[in-house]
Length: 276
Length: 246
Image 1 (tube, rainbow over the protein chains, first blue to last red):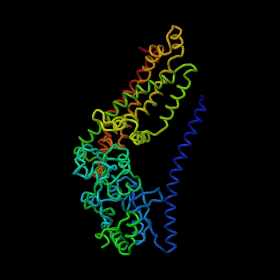
Image 2: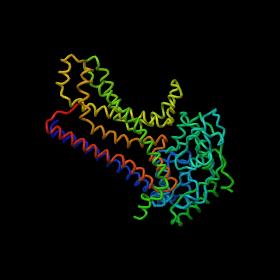
Image 3: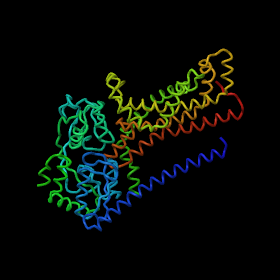
Image 4: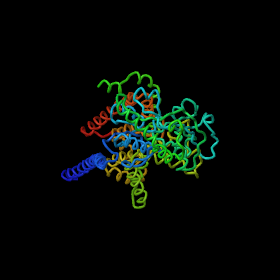
């Protein structure tokens, strides 16, 4: 290959790489600007909308958060949108990973985090939480017909959970598993269960329920109450927004929107502790 | 700036979790050792299949080239996920083989080793090929005219010389393989960076990452220096016009 042809080849490759990079940035810009436009236009229209509110979430975690970028949906997402409507802000969701989510909201990368996040003392050292919006249980998910009937049967078994979650904590503290595997994403753990490489998964009950309904072949052996409450996380110094969100949440619960969203996503009545 | 140092260079966090991360790093090394050895062998097999002469072996050459091209083109992460997600479902294979727990290693270890061997076999085949094609064609012709078969000529004349030309690029592949063992974390093998992520989730501090990466540095930096040394030594030999010792 002559030198000029080699140069030409490099030029073509360079142009290719650069155009891909530009296209990538361009689409990012598009999504933000179109988001801003929509919120501006809804504001003009009179109902809801308003200033954008950047919200971080670890997606997918069905049924709390799921869907494609720009069309995220789920219990958390719809609840956040309902709260946003009450406080005159339009949530814009960003997919992020769970193990860095509290650090990022504390550092101001997002204004709020709604990501099926349990309120714990440990986390409260880093962030502030809203009033609880959901009461959680952990479920032991197993293959249909498994001998494992509950937490007590996990001793010596191969058990999976999602990294950084309370399910993994529960596994470490109480399951006495032979091999406890931490998967980076929850659905990967459920897939491992279906394929038979792990014998049980400890995961949030609604996620387990969703897996039973959507994928089949798996069942919930036991639900373990953990007295977990989910909250919306904010940076500690953002007390003004915290008050607004708590106020918004209260209104959403009182006017019945909360119940509608809850029943839509969980096929269950919301607990008395929250709706009163 | 202070927060930055707290996030990444908190030596208390590093000290508290040193043993865990080191345990994880040993798992990286264990994946690397087996996958490296297997890929070196598998790559040589592929390279030799690619060099088979005559029309008779055209289909073998074609399949080999297709294999090498395909596995060089798929992201390793994809190969790992596909293998770990598909093999367990092959019910005609006995359970102890499709979900292996050999030698006390969990199944993600074996899926990881298999995936990295398949991919790095293809990469290394190309390195071997460069070495083999650097041997002047006349040598094979001479060997054949002495009555050696193609296989004998390869074994006694070409390959012994070819491997002396490629330690540097091969070492590069091995360094890159060691780093890619972290990808097996995605199927929950407790390797150094997966454990570092777990530490981050517990402590909200990223120092364990720095610790994990430092362990890779300790192994990879001397290796990189060795690559440079080997290249330099090889060049000196070529420059002097001396023959390469077999």
